[in-house]
Image (cartoon, rainbow, N blue to C red; front, side):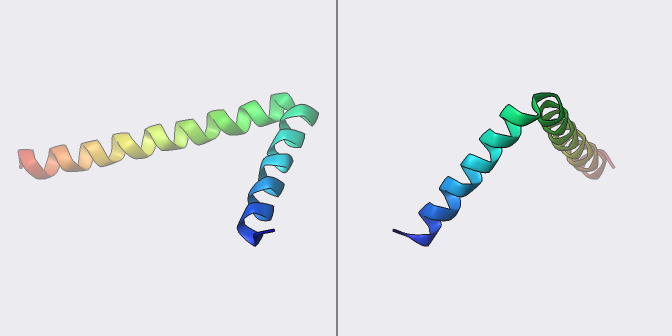
Length: 54
């Protein structure tokens, strides 16, 4: 079996276990991740807007 496949399946199993064992905590982590991505995108948009509007 390919090492990449084993690592991928292990990661999926770990995520599923985490979601099943602690769904509230898993949802909070996802919300934090989405919030981080949103804030990062807004910062990049602000930067680009300031570069072209100056």
